[in-house]
Image (cartoon, rainbow, N blue to C red; front, side, top):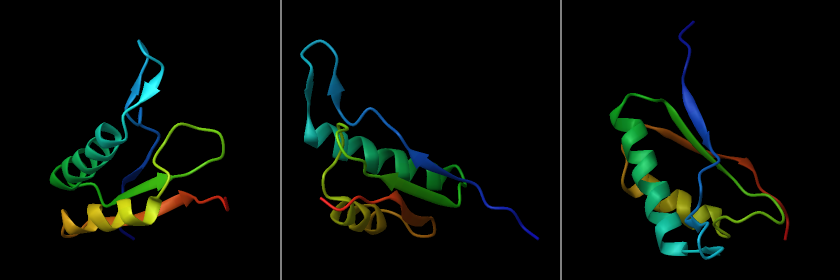
Length: 84
């Protein structure tokens, strides 16, 4: 049986400690870059998570669509999706 290796992103999501703000574009760009790099390094999967009251991207499915548009073989998915 072949094992697969992936990651569940708990990234910084564009959080700037100096200002206490989040840059949504930086968060989105970082997520895409991390996924492309993971595929290039041979990882098999990339998942994102969404939790209440945490600084993150608020729309996981458009983000997953953008990730899919920039990758070819890596599996994409969600770790947790809350109902807002």
